[in-house]
Image (cartoon, rainbow, N blue to C red):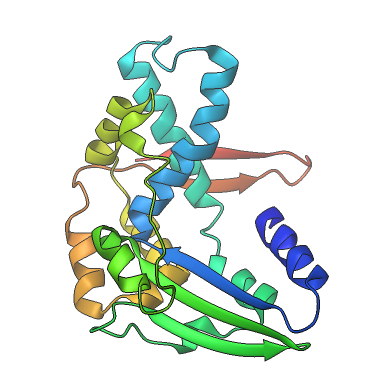
Length: 219
């Protein structure tokens, strides 16, 4: 929620008659989940321990898998619910314009003009041309690429091997706000492309006489 709090504070401090362009991005929620884990949790681990391979590859992959299942057992957050509350723009009422490959929404709030554009990661190679009609002369710069990070090889291994349980697939399919911006055929293709195999499903067990909770791995 911190990102939304910062955005809300920024918008509230803009002077009247300001015009703001808000560009928000979506991607395959299964890929976004894995990417977010490495961007935040894994980077924190590397900063504390130096190298992610200190335990050995097998043990490291097992720990990453355990972390991911545990995160999913706590649910999948709805980013766009908070986004809409922050901006006041009902972006989920929009539909991707197949020709423009974007959603554009305009709103005037407290004498401030808000222009919102939603793009999909699958169109990243064409973002420059997609944005040109809205923001003429905009120059795109490539930053924050996974392939340039020290955990790149390990990240790709996890992407190719991590198995979502049926329960976890349903959690994401039913709660991920990103799915709103994809067609039923696209959603089915995302699920069909996931690695197959035996997955652990995590069930949260709360002790009646203790305040702590534990997670049990069931096969």
